[in-house]
Amino acid sequence: MALRVLSVSQNLRQLSKGAELLKRYKATASLKKTLVNIPATQVTRLDNGLRVASEDSGAATATVGLWIDAGSRSETEKNNGVAHFLEHMAFKGTAKRSQTDLELEVENLGAHLNAYTSREQTVFYAKCLSKDVPKAVEILADIIQNSKLGESEIERERSVILREMQEVESNLQEVVFDHLHATAYQGTPLGQTILGPTKNIKCIGKQDLCDYISTHYKASRIVLAGAGGVKHDDLVKLAQDNLRGLENTFDGKPPAITPCRFTGSEVRVRDDSLPLAHVAVAVEGCGWTDQDNIPLMVANTLIGAWDRSQGGGVNNASNLARASAEDNLCHSFQSFNTCYKDTGLWGIYFVCDPLQCEDMLFNVQTEWMRLCTMVTEAEVERAKNLLKTNMLLQLDGTTPICEDIGRQMLCYNRRIPLHELEQRIDAVSVSNVRDVAMKYIYDRCPAVAAVGPVENLPEYNRIRSSMYWLRV
Image 1 (cartoon, rainbow, N blue to C red):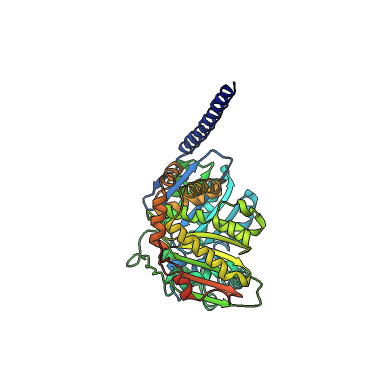
Image 2: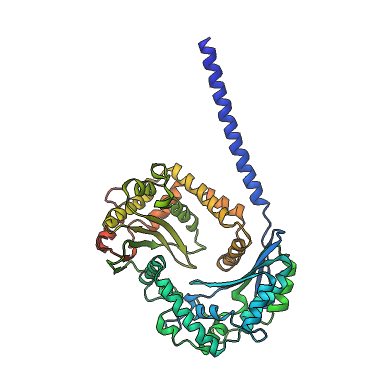
């Protein structure tokens, strides 16, 4: 009788295990089916070289924008800050709209007009109702082709930008990352800040802005992207009507990307009046199109992020998060994988008490060495699942999708479908992660940027000597 009960129990256990596997298989199959059925991104190139890319989800709202392949990396030491200055000037009136007219027109549509500048791109975009897409495209086209750039508006924006620089200086994370770029890419355009130095902002004039536009705002370097309730053929027609005047000819040679060498080095700004130390440590990563990018993203997700306010403690999956919680190593940390066209920064940023700098850095580097030598299959699987989840969550809404389309068109000259991206992530193995970690992290010279009470942060040679183990 006991044997029969045991047999039934084992059978039930097998059945429940089988049901669980079936449920998991169905969920995976359902996800794959969903990813394949996401609307395709359609792409059209106009005669002048401008690309139009859109994804029509049939939503009631839409986001349309112009992604321009030029940012602070396209500047020189003399005009650093001009791309960001130009972004500010875009909404200050055009040849046919005053600033007031422009603002009222956008307000009456119930739309949102915005812009931002990064190191490699400048973006102008609008969020609106689907029926207002033609008007939004016309406004965006007017902004980048016919900005008035009046002297009085330039002087007014100059003081606005100088105030913005003061605000950025109070954001220590921004300050640390600017220092990190300055030391990692010293002497190259990527080492420059996006806002530019104060002396440049004080003397940038109309001619500097016009020169930048005539050099970089060319049709082949611009993508009109749309997402949400956007019909692709209609968007192409709007581009032909409003953006056909964009030239694609260069005076002399077209501007080329200046290669930016990475330098293992450090910068420390010691300020004992601050309560916490802010530290970033990074090695040179790879560019957007490099085959190592996906494995590096998995490695980055594996290190993870943690904040004291989110709790978790011993239940955190990330080893570093668990150590941070149990031993009170830091207030927060986040790993990052910042990519550019031909290079990148892969590393970690953390905020800790002054006395914990050395212990936190020791744990970070120990985890990096473990990543190079003995990362496990279970950890890699977890990181892959988390990476896929994060990518899908980041595409929630028309604006993130539109941003994804615009950025990928400039980086890859196509939009990578989600099911292809999922397959690429799934294809990453433990050996892939170990190989890229050995290639980019192991025995490499890091760049270090630290701000605050950083007396207890080990000196650079000690940090460098912890980038390898004598035992492998």
